[in-house]
Length: 187
Image (cartoon, rainbow, N blue to C red; front, side, top):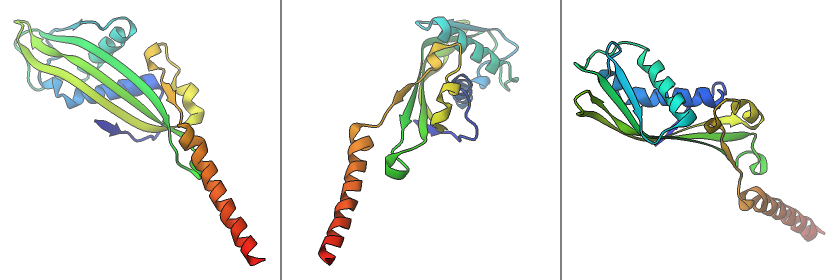
């Protein structure tokens, strides 16, 4: 699912990923399941390193935002089996001769796991694969990627040779031939 975002101000990738994760958490209605007053045990499967720390901090911040209306009678358990983030910058073929000063920044979030209570019963299974996108200026790419986390750095996908070179050459050649023929027939 592609979710376009407004590019009101270009946020760095770390803040943008954090906001996208909070949007994902809000869309799952997890606060109806997890209570702030009760302990939430967060466990990770194969997720490790900086992604584990980042996800844990984001989850804790999100849980501390407010009290949910419904509460569990026992400890909540959040188990994250898989967590992956991928950022890609795609050049667009818009503007004069397909030249553009903007990239489309796409953030693909893959999150799977489950939420349960202390007795081991699963309350909600998480299987999330969402993609967020927004337009950013090409001049801002270095600023967007400033972050201590390596997974916040994206890959740039340039246009194909067809789109970036052959199409503009064909357009210019066609116009040149038409102008040449127009003036050669007049004389």
